[in-house]
Image (cartoon, rainbow, N blue to C red):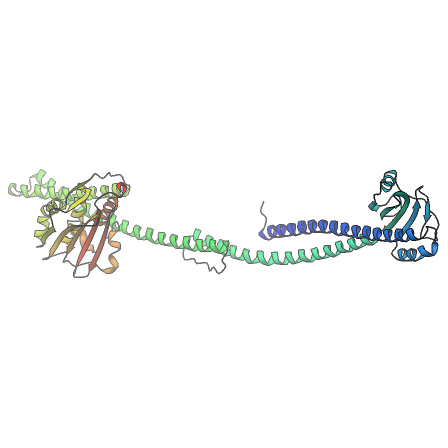
Length: 474
């Protein structure tokens, strides 16, 4: 069942107010009534002792002495009865006519024991609700009777009723005020919640350009702030997805082109060999070209498979300690032909004692990818491979004097499918835009870091830092 926020707010506020007023009213009435009864009893007791004090100096039948008391007590609506030890009434305020003494046996027993009798409210014996006080009178430790005083409590009840009416009016006013405040509060908060709902609908429709203004530091304000963060992240994710989708399409186009070219070449050459239309002295060259094109296809497939394995952590590193110079010499040997074709110099700068802690094959893969990249974009220049040991880590630098990279491309250079220069498509080395993405993934698996600095037309430098011991072993 759907209950609106304003009704929930009103129900909670009014329920709490009614409960609070009910409890307060009941407790207050009880204490006021008890205080009023106690005050009345104290008053009756005081008059009783004063009358008995006069009785000690004058006999009970001395009417002139008792007349002033009778007048005072009458003005206070207090009745009194003087009685003796035989329960006989000696004097009453109304024309001094005797009345029947209305005392219970247990009350009479308490009087004879010297105990005063106090009854805060009594309705049955006096035909109205009254407070009753009976005081004993002893002479020489002998019970001589006493005095019974009664006073109606209708005034007390009327005062309490009037206070209850006042509290009821106050409660009604407070409830009305609570209703108004609840309505204003609910309207304010529902308006803020509605903004969140509208923004949510826009996000659900794919519009992430949403920002909710938050000026209130409360839970709804925190929710709005979190919503803004979510919308911003969704926007970034959407932009990243669009960017990757564009690169994926470009990658498929590039790969299709790369596959089509060698496959067309291989198909044409195989047809020529089968039909013997290629001269015998050219067949060896044809077979060599078929071999090179086949290697290009294998390189394309392997590079993609390798990236997926690295990205999904499906590879296991076998890290060992070995001299870095051994790896540099292998890199130089593998890439010597490519360097000669570009008329580049490969210079190694590392001492024999410099050690590295890494997976041997993967480190070679890392350095081959970067060095290929440097050779590819350097002509008639120099490529340096440097290495040294720093505090608990091995530092490897690969620097070239090539064409460099635009500043806007530096961060994107690590992304899959990215090509800073579309001319890579037609080059035989690193042509698929996966090399540097693989490098970053492999370095991260080694718990290391790789940084890139470059300046257009002045060269590029890669700096790799690999820990000499695994952090898991520290």
